[in-house]
Image 1: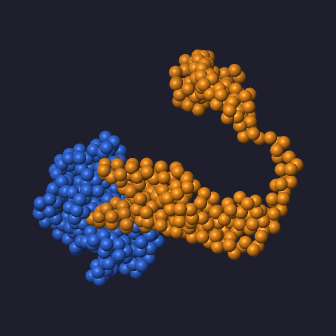
Image 2 (image 1 turned 180 degrees about the vertical axis):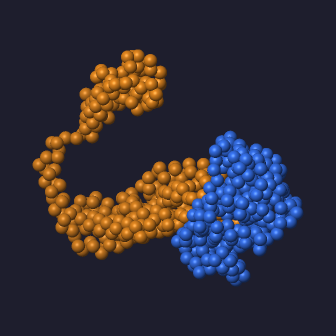
Image 3 (image 1 turned 135 degrees about the vertical axis):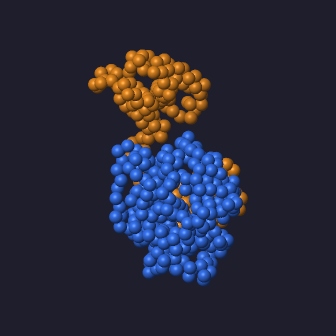
Length: 343
Length: 259
């Protein structure tokens, strides 16, 4: 007999419930209106199907039929049966194929994918014209685009530079091997949670917040990138600090050095190169992010791109896209070379 | 030279790790000023734990350690622990140097306890400290390596840098935790000879963990043998015969000669 495992039962029940609802929504055409009209019917049938799923699960368990949930969650037992399972008992294969096919099918319906739109004559012609315009850039716009891309690069640079000292200090406060004392440990948890929160809010959202706070422009973009960089760098730095070798730490401690001296002389020398490497990569990432941030009022090349795109001036957009592509490529190469040299 | 003055007195020392392992089960012994005391025993018998309790790299669970007649080491806190560590130097099996620093900078690390954080970060070691550091490097025979990065040196040379570092902190005792266990037999004796010199000529007390009994017979003034966290032998190295050897290392163990 197989032991009762509620993780397996729950997984398979939710799986069945998902299949039922997906087919129902797929048949209904899955637009918002359909969903909102039948929301209570959908919820109740979802619950009903889950319960049915539980029943089916218990039945399969009795018959020793291997479901997908069992494959994923079953605790491996030492008393494994010998020989291959008969066809009807390896149900999980059929189950996973059906689940994937249904999910992909509903996905296509939800995203309203049609071949018709792709080969629509007017649309095709419009796209073709746009492409041609993009490849005929308006060179008179070049000086302005270069100025704005420089603003973006500096925005990313300043954000990175100002993030370094903050992230440096935070990285030690967020490292488990340093924050051992109970009081220190609670500071560690508070800071970790705070930084996780800051990081999980996209830089794009921070840019919206700061553009309201300090006004639209490069300053808002810089602040958004900085706060995000502090949280990201602090995480990467602190992981480095947590992986340092203990031997120099014991060595320095044994001379009678203080905690600060031990951090400075035993830990910092071990992490300084990875820190620089992460920081260079962060600058590179920030330049790419700064472009997008410009779209929501962060200034620089992004804001300029938004302006010309809104007026459908595709030759001008072509100039800007070209400048962005060149800068991103150059930054990518430069940071790769610097990071390679640091190894 | 060995005197009758007790410099370190250990009573009922116990160490139980958070995972429940009882590494030391009530050890009591004295260390006399100027002696070369060797601690032997199998891996896991508690040798390293014992040494790390003596300079508070580990906190003992119970017991008393009296250093220099007055202080109970186990009750010290904060700055007092650091002052204790300054007086009880330590060298390690894996040298525990800072790999990216030069040899001389590693030796100067022995002076950290004498400097404020600000002075040490700015590298403000005074002239006397620097010339002393060079002198100690000459003493261990690697004066010409002073400005090389320490990770470019061989194991034996690195251990000698560690000895120079420990000397620069002006210790009263040196704890040596398996100082030759990761060295080849030839370099083994160089390092042991330096420790012997420091003990006999500079008069610094040494407590040393060792694996090889042949080394013990050659260098130890006195031997303590640990087995499962208990002292099973305390006496002269010459008195460890076949019978004692089997008692310490277990039935069927055989001595390895290091020449």
